Image (cartoon, rainbow over all chains, first blue to last red; front, side, top):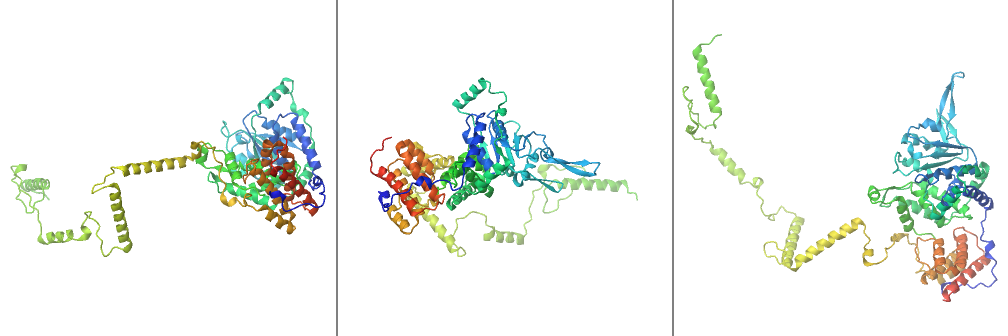
Length: 339
Length: 271
């Protein structure tokens, strides 16, 4: 029997439970994120995974793209999350005739002073909800490239820096829906996660109906209060940055992302930005789950949200009805878990 | 300058005569001009005689006898100009042809009668079916009533196989080297092997510890707390790089040992 040899403890063992606790104090992080969960949970029924991933993105300083058919509370969830944060919030409804200046802002000539003044657009906020992002054409989408990646807007040679935090929460309907455009790959790559919002379960739907039947449907947003300030969020993010990642887990992340570049069903694999996103996301998720180190479980859990919008299927696989999630699952299955 | 009516008439006849000549084959010898008053009938045209100069005929015969101008397909004859490789290939194909003729029972004309004909048809049909199934990526294992197999792992990704590790030796070596981190890992892998051997988990290199925990919880719920604690300790030591002292190691190994004994004794733990 393997575990009977060779070691036989001679001294009475100390209680190991005390030793196996996080070495950094995650109590504050747990309390704050639980408060956010509680606030949103007053309105949103179910969607626990979605909520966990939204909080993960918030802690990892990443933007989130929410995709789902109309009516599954994408916009409501994003608005609720924004409401729990005590930071400036703005909402942009993307339409086919939206211009880049409508998003970023524009320079106005001041006759009295004889110069131009920059008027910031709605993107100048800490939490920006872009509703129906794929209803605007590529010209408008490209206006977001700089601000999403570099957190600056350059107008007339002047770079205007965004406030911290700066989070873009975008919603979109599947591209098969009428009147939508496919987002450029460069923009998709700037989203930390793409989250698929699915239908509720039967029990959850009954709960939703009971809530509305009891007069819940009026102004649900009023129930939600801001419980996380910008300095608090900055402190939590700093803690996330100190998470431990063992060398084998780093290699595991690199192998998974590397496999996307060699998979026969893909003609566009994920970039190194995806590896960094997977790493940052896993660190935040581990902290949310009360650990000060990352495990392969965290990496596997985040593989699909991080990679599904960064890879492109070959036309053959698309015609066969294959999905990006299936390919990501195959890739994760093909890489040995470090242990 | 004026011309007389007589000379104009004469020129008209000359012109008509030349036009009539242009519709006839060129004669080797000039024919007399037709009388201006009557047009000769076609069947009365004199026979054409081709001019064949002796020198040209000899030259034509000489060219036709040359190999470069012989366009008829003739069986390739080995010639001194052929390379050794070409001659080898010619012999090889000739030998293969003879062999096939023997196998198929052919004498001189191609014939596919008999047993070999059906064998060849069968092989061709099997090859076509195989190619089609491969192109469609059909999993043939389903056809034989087996559960569909999981995608095979790329072989090079398999760094270690827990079923091939010599755990007592590896554990002792790690402990003697004072590498308690590695020793905890070996103890945990030995637990996984025991669970796998007793069919409480299905070992797969791509599965996480939590996946095994869920499998064990469904198979033997009573073992879940002990395995969950062993997993937590292993993860803190291995992934969390927790500095482990000999005392702490003793505690971890005691937990692993206890769980191993539960598994190894074969006694059913109340669930």
